Image (cartoon, rainbow, N blue to C red; front, top):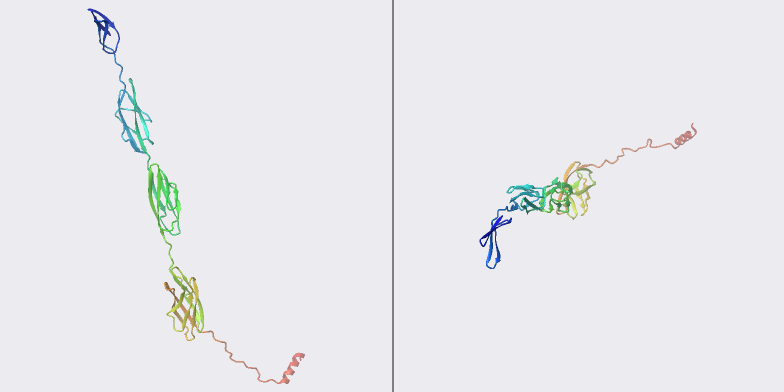
Length: 335
């Protein structure tokens, strides 16, 4: 550019390329100044790129989720790392990081480069329990069933001393009573629980009973012994006397089942006056707490008849001794 000087009415031209207009004062004498007025016409360098904003729509997401990144910039071309690539200013792009990730935005232009960062925090997903059940869910005491848990995102454990379980792997249990099992799955994202109940039907408890033969026979005027036993639960710890109920006159019974034993003999006495017949009656046993009866039928019969001697006589009431002697000799000599 050209600068014009004013020095005592004289002028001169100074040529120098500069980038902007300025004033220069030179002291050439105590009372004389040289002033230059310069005007510039050069080109300024281009401005560098700038980033106005770069933020995620959600600063935190759960693992498996997604968010968007929006960059606002000018003066260049924008690009985001972690595989996102080229972006347009103001246009949102979707990202789904599996872990907490810091994204770098770089804007490159003829005037240089500008960059900034944005972080998306990933919160681990909590465990998910798909199912937890028993097959079968109802059983009889003494039986067993299998528990199967299906879950993800953690380690599974079942209470009631079952312990650690693997997803999808059945495990056998044999509860003695109806039981509710709790499955707990613990992972980096928290804890999940669920329950399942196994219903147990108690074994049928046999009722107390008195057992004796339902039919038997006896001889009039004699005695018979009949085995009697008790079964089932509920009997006490005392002796169980046995008695007859509804028996006809002339038939008596005595017997006792001693405490803590399960059987005895009932002795029946049949009087001679009892007629031959079939008699129905009951045998009863009681320990003061439990009373049970059993129906029986007794058939009585007369004793077997004694042998009777109808006759016992000699073929001759007298024998001649001489004739007997002669007969004996004839037998010995064969004459």
